[in-house]
Length: 122
Image (cartoon, rainbow, N blue to C red; front, side, top):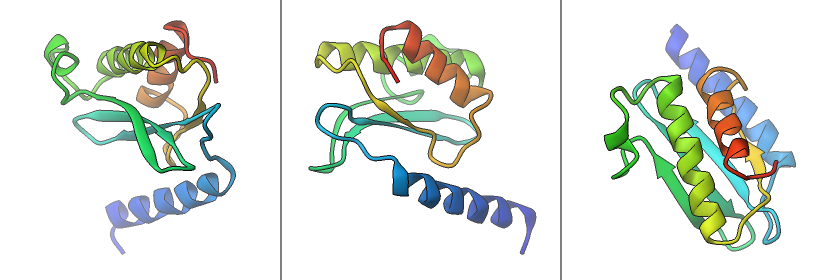
């Protein structure tokens, strides 16, 4: 197995392990993060019905236009602020954070910190 495949398989194992414990409810939906090399995506998901309540990413209109490069910490901060604003507009104040198998470091941490600063609690 090559290194990139091993890394992908390891992330999937971590993701499955975390998802056993973390699930979103009506009171506290799940804030799920996905990052690729070029972009970062985030969704607020209510797991009992399986519906996405809000989403933001560096490819979305408005968010992606305000950043020069979408694969860095500054872009993650903009996305974190955007998802918090969308959540507040829907009267969502508390969420459960799902890092989706990624390390809580760098862009994932920057997104979480920006969402907390904008008013989300997790």
